[in-house]
Image 1 (spheres, one colour):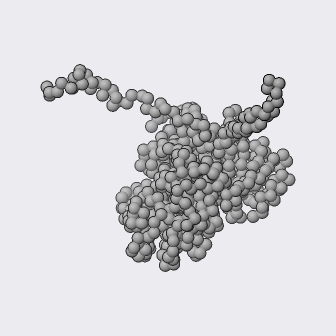
Image 2 (image 1 turned 90 degrees about the vertical axis):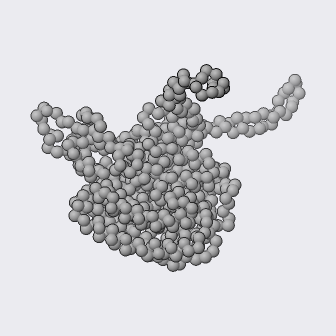
Image 3 (image 1 turned 180 degrees about the vertical axis):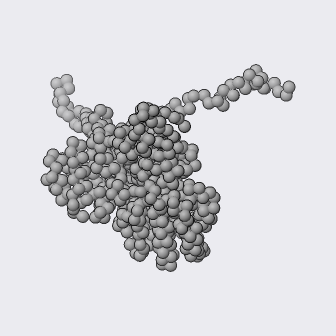
Length: 392
Length: 216
């Protein structure tokens, strides 16, 4: 922590408390605090350079790169399939949706079709991923607000059930490496779908309990309502996606507006917020989980038999023709896109990840200005970032 | 959404000197793109955003691509006078095409739920002429992504509000995503504290390396 008086632009001065406008000649002392990179509230190695006037935020600059390993360069030096396990490490909570986004981009590039059964399995695993991501986020958010332990442990208890399902299916709890170009890697083991149905059926009870525990809580309301408001126009212009965007009232869910896979067959609603504050972001996630459960129930019921990989898809010597493709999906954290350029060789010429976590941080400063440092923790928690994806 | 040809015609009609061309794409998804001249890129971007039929209010993805200088060798048979006799001689002609850096923007419309329109802008070359107009004033979503392109590819975006490196540290001189980037081989050249300990420990080893046996 260093104490000095950084220069503050004139327009920011106007926002300050009356003390900043005093002409007494005593001078204004600002405090520059480096939050992170090891601060527990930053959810990983992320740093914010915060300038404070008393307890109010005057300026906030995020600092990235602590987890940077140049994922894109590594991917350009390896085969298309070789990058699939690396995508697990982007947003390590949601490896299945990362796999899907990458597989989707490659399928667009190479013109592969996905068999019916694989499409259903993809939707089931992706919606389970959405459940576990949103559940954990709510737990972490409560933790950030000072509800130490209990809500997070409840969330982790439910997450564990889903991770057990992933382990039974893919052999790994978090680094699933499950999708393949034109399908999935392995078929469902015996009894899996029944166990998944049990987990899904038990979820609404947990959600209801969690909702009662949290959303009516007076402290939680005081900490989140009216905090970190994000106006819809700014959200759109700053490319904010996912629950963040919808909490600001913009109806944009790729599962509806640009359906990929077979999402067009599933009737579900897109919850929208009205205020765009932290409370709305929290509620949107709770409501989205309810919709995910609807999708899951339908998918589990309708799951057809058949092959799980496109027979045209090649595992070895996979060389798509020269060209480019941009594929994007509605990942739990926002729009996850992969942009690929092929030059006809076995490695992608250009491999780009469009990371929702990084881009959703664009407006972090705008949301935090004028709030206190304790609010910054809550606001950052409501953005929902994973540093593996931010820094890549 | 209207076809790319129509968009091109309307861009050219409203922005003079836009220098728009359609870039084909042979992949099955056939996402073709519009390449515009860098001088008018900002005006074209504003047109695409504000046009009531397009309303591309959302810049989903902004990224860089490196196209290094290419040398194509061609074998040509040339007739030459050698010692007074006309002979056919094979010669290799080298054709050097200067490379460039390219910024690619994937644009969608959240208002009209349509897209994508892919916008590409190229720099003059890869060494000095790496300046492009920043599109962050048009779409703020490009702010961090343009910083990343600047960091990893070295494209300088004129008019960017805060153009600093994003992932690599300040003072770093290279642009790692360029195709001709060579990894430095001087990682960990500094002795770690552990090395010092090992060095000191040597004073306690027997001079012959311990081959004479015996524990003292």
